[in-house]
Length: 245
Length: 247
Image (cartoon, rainbow over all chains, first blue to last red; front, side):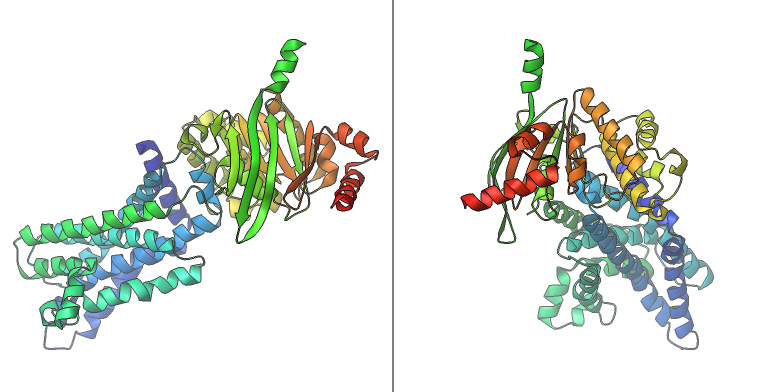
């Protein structure tokens, strides 16, 4: 591993995103629009559904978006021959993966800061815990999404397949993460499954932040999400082969 | 004289009994040859004969079935070799959404070479006036030159070029071959593939390849003499007919 190369990769990925105005705009504006839509849905409802669902969705958006963006970008890197060229150069596999993780972490930080600022500032989302910690959780979620996206891109040979991994890997996690029904109320088997899915901990962290100002549990959840992200990066590194058949 | 012979004998690459199977098909069928430093060696053969697979084996990104590939005395693909080899794949492997200069600056950072090399490489492939254009908007020939410029960045001791001159303007093609010889004159080994037989005479030495086998390994003149033909295309045909008779 070499910081010069890792940062070089991160910088290059950020330049590519900046060059693609439409993607850059969507990355930053879309989560804000979706939060506004959610707020609008419940504006006439007597129950505070926005407060109940909002934090979970703030965890979800960066996860989903980064999963999709990363799996497609890495696949493009594999199929265009640039990955083969890089791996024939003195570049560590972790340099490549961490470079991507850093770049998308930066994007996620900006994205989440905007969505959180809008939700709390303008839309009146009620958060008990520190607001900056909400952004930290969102960044951890985004890095997790990137890491999983990098990992699954190894199993896709076309961009069509890569996009199909989203319903396979992401939707079950959304269903079981506690957003629809508290995880304790799931059938025991499903609860056990939800206990080993990373998004459950991301949602837990957001829920805790919205209901209490104690941060101990939140940090524990963030640590679990980060551990999952690192494991996915490790697996991703194992799928990058210098020699291919 | 002795020194010259000694220099000519010095091999950058040694390939022995190389067999590569891809997707159940034997693409390379027991190939052996050497590449000398300080010379331009051409690999000529029709498309689909295994040229790209052979080049991938030299660079160390191809899984081998059996046999060995040694580069500068080490097994191909070891990490010490990675900064000494420049490799250009047939497809243009640069980032379409970055400018020529941004692409080179990035790869220079990966290789750990200075910014001067970026300008030098852009100059070597004659892309100065396109340096700040996004690669995706350049013509096919300009894009492949941008890809070639990346391989020149690290001043490699072995340059492996997979069909670098396809679709280029004849003037530019001549200039690039001149560049390959300049690089070889500095002591590097240059290994260039082509499916166009009329590029044969631009090489110091030729490997003719067909269906995963090397059917000739000599200087262009040597091959013409041996086959009693006037051009490499006829020589190729005559060699194929000979091996056909033998089989």
